[in-house]
Image (cartoon, rainbow, N blue to C red; front, side, top):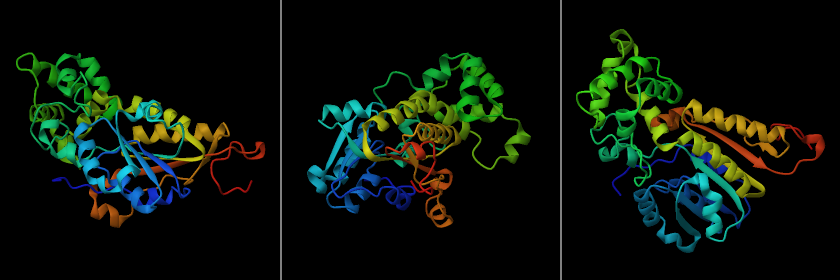
Length: 312
């Protein structure tokens, strides 16, 4: 296939899915099919619905999983509308939903997709390439104030104002069309002393912020969690792997809210993170956090509890 694909926290994800033998699992972020393949191998009777808005990813995953026959069904679309997508295929309830919110290596290493600050290419960043708004459009049309808000809100970039200023000044002469053009402007916008103290690439936060804005990732996550909850049957499981604090906070607070409403419990009780061995094997997993929610009816005496350690 030409792309390295290492599913993150795979053992923990499987451990969070103690499902019945004929379970139906929705892999809401199919990607290249790593999780889906593991689910199909884990139990010979499990079935998997794989959802992804990236046509190339779906094509690769479908080829990878073709030997599983009718046990695997790919669906084109965004996980934020998974309930509708499943209903269109005659599926009203599922036993589990899994979301891995990371960007795949395929997207990062393909310079033409514009996700990577290490690869030169068009400043795109659209996961769904039929979508209208690209990163280039945001960078070349938004005001300095609007760009600053995006960089601060979605990237937590300290020097958002000065980076946005460099972009606005530069685009008056030449539109910002490529990833390397943007990287250079980001470097100019960050003071040299701060650059010297940085552990990671200076463009990382701005690129993250633009990717989130282009794809409405946080809006998709908020809506996707609600869709997943409604799609889950009784005793269903929702497992989400996040990669930065903005995502993790949304998941954490939504799960807590459901617990307080007596709609289920946290399983596992706390976020799980990769061990040193996995991080060494797959450095991309370093920032990953797994959270799980077990949807179940609770007696009044147990409502509001967060985890399974109290006996009902």
